[in-house]
Length: 477
Image (cartoon, rainbow, N blue to C red; front, side, top):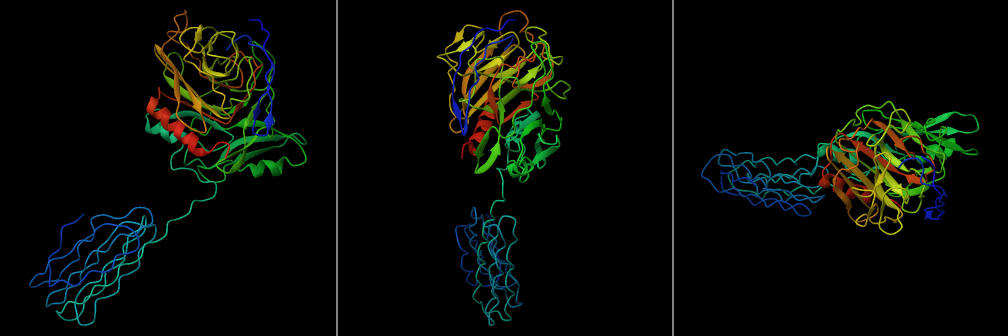
């Protein structure tokens, strides 16, 4: 198709002030123990904890201490169980245990020399062990129980650490595992501990992988800064963190234009979770692709995807996409794509007001709803950081979006496929694109920070949990 005239718009994100002018182009507790006469229990450990059990007096036999029914939370130690006295034979009771803390409680002190009361055990921590009970006295006179151990202190987080679950862990829990996970900002699995992306140095054309600071953490951007000092660098590979290894490299020539160029590695610096990192700044002529993928949906198979982008850096050109596209860089017809589009192109569908909008690029149409008519329910997303999501299954697709710094996702559309021939069933081919259209239309502009694609159609609850994780990551902070 021919390109139509577009509009120019200037907007700001972080330190970058940019927007490119372009056009819409060719496509879019335990019971008490019995025993001897009771001794008094140990004093409670610091903090809150479980209620101590108490033993009842008996005529003979070795007594055991009551076990605390439950522990405290966090770093607080549990209260000790009361030790019970042994009988004439001089039993050896055990101290009460309790949950809490993050290190072992101290050993309880022994009962008085004239008695046989066992001392209470120390508080139990997360990962720590119970304190041991005191030894019994030699006679049948009950002695005072020993003191309980104090609670251990909680451990501190490691540098660059993230929450126990990351987006791909959340998707897996929801039954829709990631088949692609791309980010220059952070790990998208809690256990991912290797490289996020690669940069190419202009001065000597050598490359350098940029790792995470720690497993599940943020990018070690200092590696890039050191390697690229006194020269410039481009992003040569965005590694797929999923087991499918669908890495993105610069896009080849296609039906709509010549080969793409790599993005400037230093053009989009930002803070996320207190860490200085880099995003992918796409200007017209830039783009990434993988035509030989593994695990990506084909035909009418279900899938889901999201990306974090910017509501301040976009244009009306075709097409700032992330998602499923043709494997031969050509427009092969309606329904051969299913990708997230973000921008304010109006050559096909559009949302309310003037955008930017999240839409579904299904090939030969950017859909804000079921048809190419204006979809008033699809409202602009202009926050500094935007979460955009598209998903599809036989007969149905959905579009969602929201502020990546706060709040929840809004459903812009959830319903039947377009009625135009070719979109139901779909004919997805399974390539992955970033910043371009399926036929390599590369007149678009946008920012990319992270994105995932899934096997299967994720539930709204799963997507809501992904959004909460993104907000917790701390974009712009």
